[in-house]
Image (cartoon, rainbow, N blue to C red; front, top):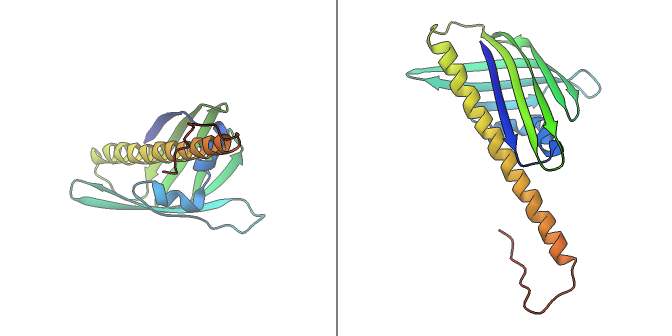
Length: 171
């Protein structure tokens, strides 16, 4: 199954890349991801184990994969499966942009190592990837808003007090 998705975000390229590489927290904001953790020792090539669950109709599928990951900050993340129940998973995240906007392209080839009904497989993957992309978009937007809010507070608090100026309290 070939997968392609694009995210456009009003956030810096550095923030977008930071969200994508927050490996040990991905399960906190990616729907369907049960766990994500770095399993390689410091100094060794990066290995990331991810477990996810996806439901379609009356069936539930568990994905368990260990990925070899290569980072080219802040522009590219490449990955390929080295263990798990996916026969093949390989792809990359490409990040472009500047200090105010980023575009993220996700390209992957995924082949389950377990039986999935032929018509359901592509629908299942499309649904799962769509939910995951939405989770990434939400987390990028949340962190970007948080960053802008903090920056705005610092800018306001650095000014001399002016009569009639009210600084909004934290959210």
